[in-house]
Amino acid sequence: MSDAATSGRRGRSARRERRQAGPGGQAVPYISRNIPLYDVLSEEGVEKVEANADRILAEIGLEFREDPEVLEIWKAAGAEVDGERVRFPKGMLREILKTAPSQFTQHARNPARNVEIGGKNLVFAPVYGPPFVTDLDQGRRYGTIEDFRNFVKLAYMSPWLHHSGGTVCEPVDLPVNKRHFDMVYSHIKYSDKPFMGSVTAPERAEDSVKMAQIAFGEEFVDQNCVMIQLINANSPLVFDATMLGALKVYARHNQACIVSPFILAGAMSPVTVAGTLSQVLAEAMAGCALTQLIRPGAPVVFGAFVSSISMQSGAPTFGSPEGSLLLNGAAKLARRLKLPFRSGGSFTASKVPDAQSAQESAQTILATVQSGVNFALHSAGWLEGGLCSSYEKFIMDADQLGMMHVLAKGIDVNDETLAMDALQEVGPGGHFLGAAHTQRNFESAFYRSTIADNNSYEQWVADGELDAAKRANARWKEQLRAYSGPQLDPAIDEALQAFITERKASFPDSNV
Image (cartoon, rainbow, N blue to C red):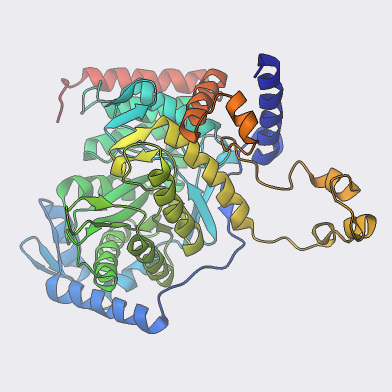
């Protein structure tokens, strides 16, 4: 295919993407679902799960390890504290959680990118946490800060991702105890979408808050949520000192915590959906309630990262029907607590962006949209059970997220969509290609994939016989070449860099 043909086709694609992105070429800030929820857990069933969770909390309890302050907080609130084990009277946590907001705004550096978390809203955020990255050219390797910046840029450029995320990959070329500075700075510098802070140590959480205060202003940060962060329970029924330390920092600063049990059912919870949901509810309620004891009214999100394992090998599995059922059931539990809900994404255990990865990710992201998830981490780029951030998978997933935007809108019924004028114009036996209604609406009529090939076999051969991964490979390179970053006030940029330089110089490098 000629360069001119490629340029023309790409030009049309670029214009279409600008239209899809909304006024001014900016991405739609978040999805507001206009379709009903798909609910698989009956009222009788959910009441039994809640009763089971109450028994777990009262009879077994949770451990809060190596944090005497948290134990004192629970004791003062009326819980039974025995060493590091804490047991909760029935109804105690639900009462505490009444101060938590059912919906809140996470402010972005660009106010047009603010997201509403809770209610009917759904926010897509990219992959989080992988130590490895991969692409078709260089293969699988440890992530670097350059890779990290690249993924931030790709998320910024996608109209379908509403959030910059957090640890889009681990930049292992930087010291463990200092890389959070570069990661948070990259989110602020190379994107103006909302972002996440560091949770790997309390002092790194404090650094993240300080950087947010430089970017947004100290008073604004105290009164508004500008960061959201992932606080994982160490399932089963444990919160460790690292997560508790970060939770306390962010809650005190009025920044949102996503309290997520991290569960592979069969290893870290019972093998049954109902038993796992009971455990998820107990862990999430305890962590969410702690934020309210620290600062009543602080934004908090009920999270659930739940999948299963292979009973043959013990390896994690993703895209399973049980995973979708767990996601759906946990969403209902969160709604009954009137808390925003985090789960879902584009999960796969596949090692490459192939048919398995597409199938498993489609299974999960569809359940995410239909179940009522409010914040979906890992929406783009996830590969190899979360061990790898893939450039090609990122592009493939983002394209699928665009389809989810259309699905979530539902069916619009009005005079224009009923198209009576087109039916009258064409009549029996005609065709609609030339109809005035078609001409008015053809550019926005159907979702057009940025990487799918719908041409004839002969045209596909002429274009190089590229599969989806190879087309995605070309696209992420094209996007990075075209990247033009948002403006950052030079004074803020200078202050951020000065803070980072001073803090880095104040303690030695370490890989712990």
